Length: 118
Image 1: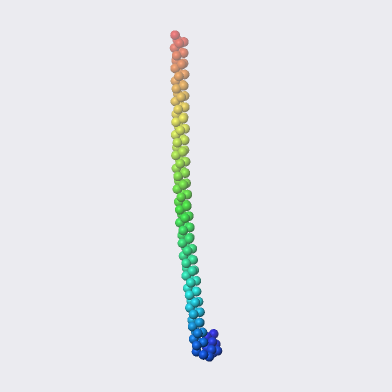
Image 2: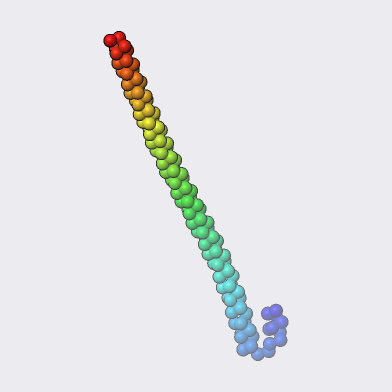
């Protein structure tokens, strides 16, 4: 291309202008390439950053979920414990009541027996 240009161009000025034009074109192309590479790298970096952020977010979410689960489990445990305690207390109370009733009955029986004896 350049050879043909030099062949066709007669004057020196036109040649120099064409040369400069070519040089400019080359420079522009180089710059464009550089820009493209830069853009690509930037995109890659951004993607990596986004991925990292996403991973971090996921990890945080997982941690939060785990914590929540743990808390729920603890709450459930406490609830069950209290419930069992309540049940135990109720049972104890019932037993006591039963015992009292039995004692009363026994006393009544004794009294009756005594009366009979008398």
